[in-house]
Image (cartoon, rainbow over all chains, first blue to last red; front, side, top):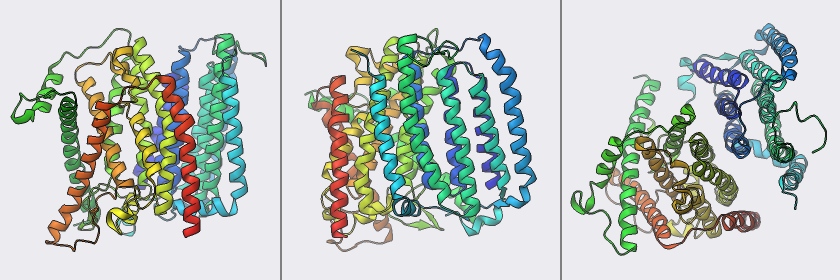
Length: 164
Length: 111
Length: 349
């Protein structure tokens, strides 16, 4: 069952990522990315990260990507144009990404037996486990993040405001 | 409900497969980052790369039975949310002055 | 029999039964709204089809099914078809984690919920936030300025009020110490009505915020700007007809029911009796299994009535008023509620 679910949602992830690459309209790319993120949430669930799975759906699929779709709709972004700059990017981009993938996949697959298997249900982090670590051991970083968010809110308000 | 009684009906997945999946997603993100010309799509491919890395963190957290890997993902999500808000605000500001989203025409470090 | 097979078969059965009941409930919520709003406006509402107009949903369904299925020119075909499906699926999916009865089991499988998850509340929030795409894509793909304006309004409104909605639930979660919906209900079942979150849990401020944010999230009056017919000729579903329109319609009422279910679970003690242990258990095991379901349905119906009552009473907000209300009033209030609740919990232990 683990393998079936992994293949199903891993396949969806890969299909979404490749589709993001191939689509020319930003809204189609955004939707493919939503598919990737939501499938990743299922994979997190398989790996025993239940809070993160929910956070992935709420934060990434439900907030960040809604913001992206909103901006695409607001700016009425059309299909991409092909320009001279993109030809060079094609020449470098595809081989570079393929080489990166080749190296990473080779390393991971050659260490396959050393890495072992992921067994469903052998490791489950409940929300209380996660929050215990977050609010006891890592309280200071957590508080610093809230300052980061405050700065981000102020920054985005200032940036997006129309000049009078 | 799922637990010991079903474990015989399940097959385990090698951790390496999760890592390879993450590598595929990351490479797609890199390729999209390089070849896409629309600034919003470029920004989205950064999010894709962040997601690929998150999957690696969760996979290793599962492997080492450590919570800290998941905490890291939590922080990445928070930073990504802040980054998306600021980044999209910048994109709106750029669009207002340049009226284009093509990154080839956005080549000056000022509005 | 193999326990996995039993689990799968029983789950499929539960899904089928719950889905049929839920869809029927959606159809009859529409009738309830038309009847109640009719009485509020001093008219009868539908009364011709069957006794008291009870077959009206059936007639509406047949009418919508037989209408011409239009596809306007210039639409983004794939997204145009996908949007109503996303909206409907997101509306129907949440019911899967709602526990609508006691914890009775049959062969190790719980009868009165489809899935009992540790993160049930977060799942509902997540599915609700996915539902926005239905509205956003409908407006985008329709190639119509009114649709686009409606969906832009809806998206901005939903992501703004989601914050207040999520923060209003933190107090409830802190009191229960769990995100599992059954645990949240269990905390409220000790002394009946006195231990409900809205009364004994002192979460009435949170309930008020939840109520307002939920009206905005489901695009209902007084926050129904995305489909304001006077300004936007219907908003995001202007270009939809026939069954695709019906899917949006069902999604809206399905969301109403989900919101009512969540309010019941989080603030009104879910499927437990309001009298708690004052009345000793009576009847057999079957009565004790059915009674909680009846309480749950009664509470949800009361909440739906409140929904319709508000729609029949309050005028629509203006857009800037809506945003100001969400960001400048509800959000600070929700944060204040969290601080006060956590202080009280820290002092009382």
